[in-house]
Length: 452
Image 1 (cartoon, one colour):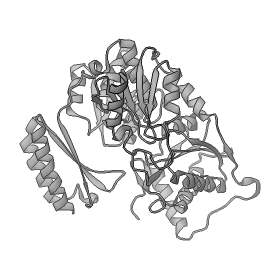
Image 2 (tube, helix red, strand yellow; image 1 turned 180 degrees about the vertical axis):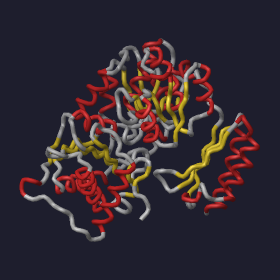
Image 3 (cartoon, rainbow, N blue to C red; image 1 turned 30 degrees about the vertical axis):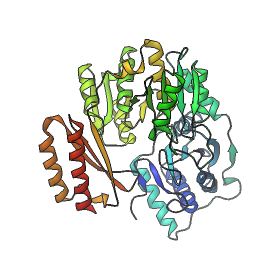
Image 4 (tube, rainbow, N blue to C red; image 1 turned 90 degrees about the vertical axis):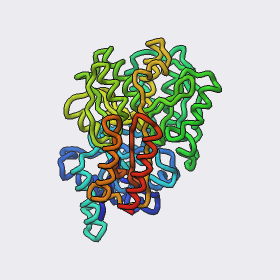
């Protein structure tokens, strides 16, 4: 069996790859593994379970809740809330386990299961591996040790989560948003209620799009993966800026008042300078992944800040931050982690802090984001190839070496298998966009030839 857990939980097409049986089995396995690890020792275990609005989340939530309760875990069902809200509530409510059902920015037919440990932190790789092993062992016939009578878990709906999470966000905001007009695109996702509530209570005049989830329209032509509607709305309403989230609102991308896209690297750069000004950027260091634009690295160097780079995936950014005590990290895709206030990427918190910087500084977002110049970057997703052989193919290694010689010190190449989808990502940066496109196209062809 291939590894079920990717860089962000277990994902697949709901009811095909990710079935109710799998959701139930993984939940029972998680409960047993955490019990064996001593997490539940001395008390009745408690789990927080939330989801995004996907239709499949309804039956998957039922399966997860059933699995946990059958394993003796009490469950608080918090309903449709962002991933970072579930992580926050897992910590603030003293739960032993959190579960989020979402496929984040993926299309509606997909769904996923993400587990949080006590405190709202992502599970360690070794625990995920153990959960997989136990799940497979029992899927193929080994009986579970099942509690009976008063030993089974109880299930309760918990409706206070939204207000508690919004209160937490407003409590850490360094400056009100009075005087700002902001367009929010919620991707018909998990933050459709949370984010407008938070921005309004923070003092902004709010215009919303993508706030009518029906279970089928999540991420459909809107949100952080489709910024054109947000750009148009910002210009139409004469807004100061726009904020876009993905389906589970752990990401944030932005648009300035002229409709220009502000990506995760630029957001990190703006927040880094704001945090240094407030003396909360520990070590004057930002953690980002190898996918970050070279212009981001050059901007931080110019401002006297340090950059630590990790493998792609916000879990690896988070691990580096926790190990060394850094306060800010994230990805170009818009996952931004402010570790003093969140245990995972939090799109609503990121958007609030970005808007607060605009309000506090009196400068436009376009002006603030100009601290860095994005070098031309081309990303091609190559599908229907054997992504497991990216690092072992001699043919592909030769093509990469040729590309790196051509680019020299003015660009770079990155090939990596996706952690959440069946594809290989080809990324090329160069001083000239035409050169970046040409090199990326040749490398994509090489990937198809070598791995197809």
